[in-house]
Image (cartoon, rainbow, N blue to C red; front, side):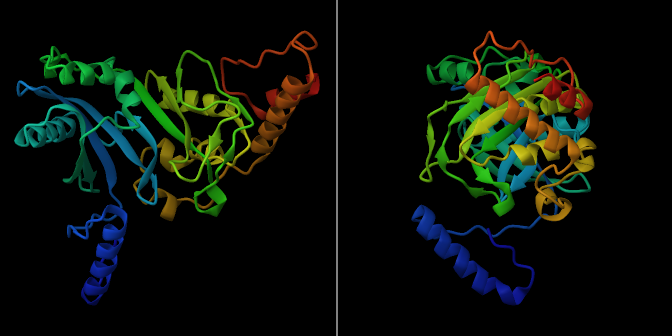
Amino acid sequence: MRIVRKSEEMEKLFIIASKEAEKSFNDPSVFIEKYIENPKHIEFQILGDTKGNVIHLGERECSIQRKHQKLLEEAPSSALDEDLRSKMGTMAVQIAQAVNYYSAGTVEFLLDSEKNFYFMEMNTRIQVEHPVTEIITGIDLIEQQILIANGDELKIRQNDIKLKGWAIECRINAEDVQAGFAPDPGKIEKLNMPTDSCVRVDTGVQAGSSIVASYDSMIVKLIVKGRDRKQAIKHCKMALDKVWIKGTKTTLPFFRMLMRHPKFQDGSFTTAFIEKDLEKYYLNSEYEETLAAWLATKLFIEENLSEDSISIDFKHGKEMSPWLLNKRINQF
């Protein structure tokens, strides 16, 4: 992508974009479209069958991005009310119907500060962030995709779709946030994930797995639910504090900071959040230092002591304060 802010830049940036497209996709074609400044990235999950039935399953908020790539997704979006959700959802369905689309798919929009929305693209596949939609709708999207591929008619109608609760997904990648989210390939030496009932963990790696530079740097998807957005954020902070990955740098420090950032908490962030609103990529406080000490001590105990030599419960029903962390560490 190249942004043309002055007419005299058009030819130069057009050529650059065309050459990059040819190198990456063996196709020099370039789309020229209106640039929406500091928008929100809102996408709608759709399902369509071979009989012409198409429905949408609500939206996902995907505005936390770096280099135009998503880092966090949540469903639903705090930026939409029922009227706007209906308008955008109807448009998503009409777009899919216009091309006789069937299977699972996602119609993506940009939403400006005046609540005007613009079609951006359609992803004709299941997406990384599909679990947040599954959580708030109770519908297994992979199951539906298989049934549609089998030629079955959708048994779900638009009136059946009810959004309940809130879900947040963090893409924990092997990246060095201090180096501009540069990939940090390496071998996973230690991997510990939360097992709380409000947490879903999707991953294909384990201790001993290698994260190589040839593929996407994502290690795990951490998906957390709550009855509303405030509770989902609280649960996400708790879950992130229980994740332990040793062997490669990850985006964990970024997410721990993000959950505590005022603009994320009030929902006012846009796709420009990292570039314009973020002063630092990680949480740098007494709490973070204590947390690091706690994690290091926990790892030491796991690696050097038998299960019977110490009895400490690491599962807590609420977010741990620095005082509680210090108390736990002193108990060791």
